[in-house]
Image (cartoon, rainbow, N blue to C red):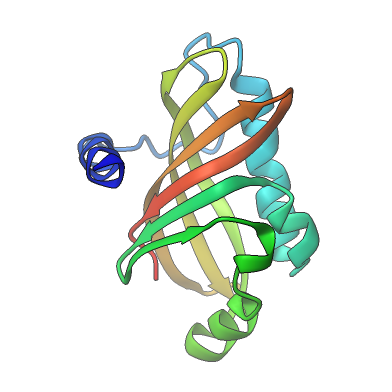
Amino acid sequence: MKIRAFLVVCAALMLGSVPAQAQPQSLGCVSAGSAFQVLENFMEAFNARDYESWYATYHFPHIRISGSGVDTWATPGDLPRNVFTSLVESQGWHHSQWDSREIVQCGPDKVHIAVRFSRFDGENNLIGSYNSLYIVTNKEGVWGIQARSSYAQ
């Protein structure tokens, strides 16, 4: 039942449009800096193909909703180890970037961020752009990505 409620919230938030701006918007959220830093660390580690640093940006259990379904990982050891290889082989992926990040809901220990990101090949040609919702939480003083819902595969 919790997953169903989460899906409903994600769908409602993702129906809105995300402004096409490069800089994150915080709406005066006091947690914005910490939440945006997690996203910066996430993208930096992702582009470096550094699994350990990338997974360190997550909180567990971690939930990802994508076009292929819902994945839940209880621990870092449950996460897939072929993400980068799969993207390179299936799409010619080289790197990704944030196109926009906008806080849509915020509290002291949880921030919902509507993002748009793009994937590029080695010649900087656009592969695709995707809207997503990231839920960043504070657990025992550490900020991490608790859940993601994306239209990307």
